[in-house]
Image (cartoon, rainbow, N blue to C red; front, side, top):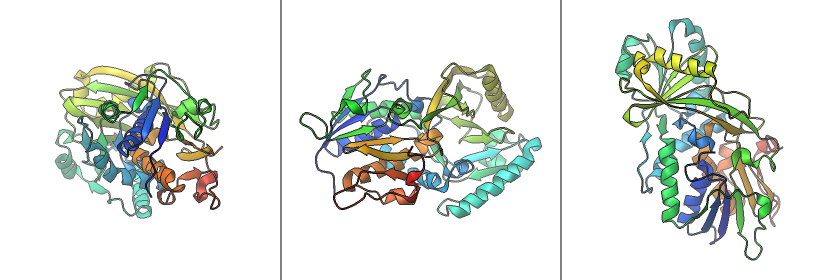
Length: 380
């Protein structure tokens, strides 16, 4: 049954907060959204992201449930983008993985792992092994640079900053009441009381640590480069001895390059070592990056729970906390959105079982709210 007209206070105007605000307002609910920063989302991990939608590629470091969430997003993102008044770059041309000869053994290990994961999540298209000729056909600018590669069909990407800006425009169009530079915690509200919202949705990421002590930050560093001499048709990953480097091409020869994953809450500028490794790897993929211009070296910490998996919990009636999207924010946000809407509508979620998503919900008058078997994970 559809949720009856309600009022919502959403805490945190990052990716999840904005998606929820737009969808709930579109359904006719009254929505207020509060954020410690401004409309540019300068404090959000979503601003410093490549926004790749790569479930099979990411299966190398995550669980099948997250992979299924990523597969779900490949069909949901076009549906979520279509009604927006502002254009958002979206591409679904697959992912390319390449490697240098000295990393062939690591590439073989990765290939076996991805093939095993594809058999586990059978809805994913099978990877394709490319020789030098096939690689040159898939990505002509890399002809003669690599002898082999992998192509993961169907994977995609979008422009994170265009999306965040477009969601602000949509919130304005839908009369969402935005409260910028106005941080709030769930304790500031008494859901269901006179003059109070019916629901509080906490999407503050690391800002929610006072309420969710298990959250930790995982630092990421990315470079944004304008390289007119480089043309890549799809996100490209370079097998690396320590971690895979990714290069995500956006519009107008803009590239987002990243890889680093450091267990730290440090938000200081990017280190010299990380910067040298990112830029050297990009140059090794295509020497045209040598004449590119560094537009930005950015750092941010992703909100992460102990098992690196997302979770939703209800600490008290009328309050939902959505958190732990880690490095997969754009890849799993549509699934998290749809599960949250199911919980709001029905007090439970069928989708959460498909995604092995940890739920910890308040009991209902009919009995305990349903939760997945993994509900004990990360709900600390």
